Image (cartoon, rainbow, N blue to C red; front, side, top):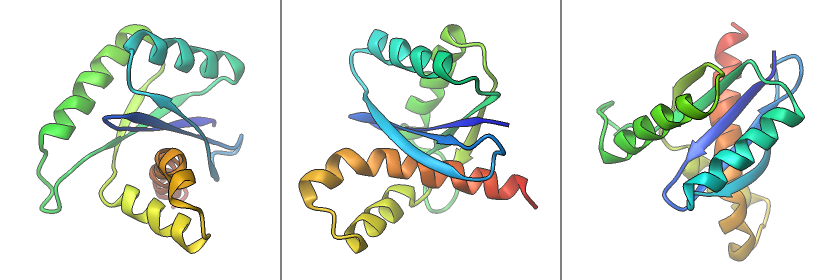
Length: 137
């Protein structure tokens, strides 16, 4: 089962995909968060190139588990996504995914300039991999 992973951010939306077996997540790109019609165009192009059975979107939560303003933006995005794309959507806890992505990129000696464009898709892959790992148990 192929799964598409998204990390919705203020500036960029990170995109990751799973392999055909639904075991390994791979970062592929980021999509600028504005303008909105271009987001839908790009997501539709990705979904047309490869069929996916599920979209997993990172849901931001505070460290105490509560939801804040960022979660409301993601909920709005999911509602709009449902009107554009007819694939089931599941949210997944994304706490510390961007921090983890930054740490991985720092350990790989990726420059600050390159990290800016890479951290979002890496965070999407971390979120997706966490989801995939949970389904393997």
